[in-house]
Image 1 (cartoon, one colour):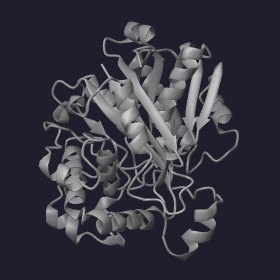
Image 2: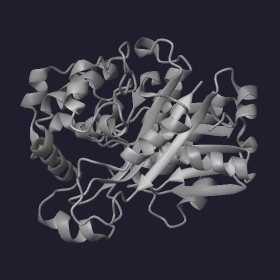
Image 3: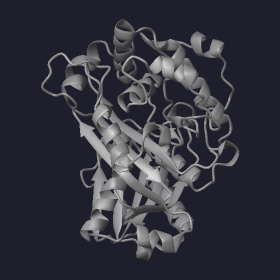
Length: 383
């Protein structure tokens, strides 16, 4: 991909647990903050993308209602519903709309209040499996951990290092909700949530909102001396659908990750930082393998041998990720996008990655019973 599409501004609200705020209140804060950061008036924005939300955004007319609440009259409008992959997907969809001439400047604003009772959905997992045992994502990811352990050995030490590394980054992030130092003992003594998954492997639900402003490369250069370009992008949904007995340790990221890197003409050694969607630590081990940083089954050894700190060889979720910064529902994937943009603009503060020129960012959405997650998205952002 060339540098036709860029992010010209960003915003991240201070997330809170059980905020009591309406989703439109959060959405409005993120929208105004993003426009202010980009130096763009609302009247200049002719495209809007919002996310399907767990709490407060269940209307089938959600994108229309959001535009109305924000006082906008966009020429192009969309709500993205691929779970935690929606924020990264919104950047690509905004770029596609701009290239097609449907819009020139698109506000991608994501908000969620999962502390509100979510709208009930239907589906095989929800109707026939959840009531009897898996207990939602922790139990389902626990099955993935146990299958990985059976095939390749225990990934526990790698999961521990990932959790500790991200917590150290969160300590340097004033927006992170969990900033108390974590020791190895803290990790291994934390409560078992689902067999194979500890409390400190998991995200913490909270309320929040984030946004980015997407426009053409030319317009972005006019708006800011620090445009961030989308140079590689790929998604994969419902990986390996015809296999009745899939390997849950292999995901659609094995398709999307290498494709996004190839589009950006980057080798693995060229990647300056990795900002992956991190609802559970085992997902990061698997993504490192599927993206090709190491062979399948060698993720734990790679994690052990690699400095993942913000000053290391492959900085990992430098804002703390969702595990330590908090997971504001289905808007949470924007944490990775915003942190990558922040770092590439040299605005990372005490956790700034030196000389960062690019970032591999990911999003995932929905995990199914006896399969892996259904949506795998990878994108490369560069300056």
